[in-house]
Length: 63
Image (cartoon, rainbow, N blue to C red; front, side, top):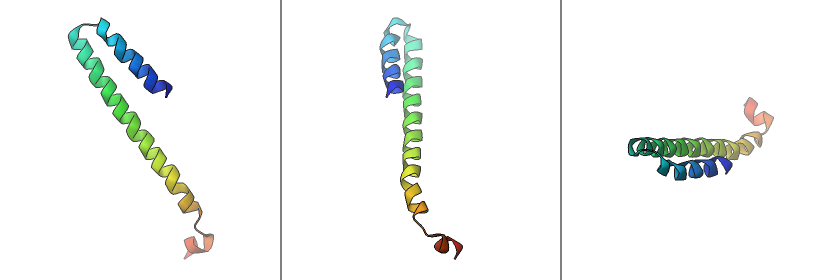
């Protein structure tokens, strides 16, 4: 949550920079947020899948 908060604060400060830089900064922030969300979703899916894998008995794995 701190990272997202930092991104929001940085985005608000973009108003102090020239127009072209504003657009570039906003696009970069959007890309970063998308990348972070994708990474979070991937890790979350792996964590959810991990208990299902560890619940399989060793004999079932050997078969």
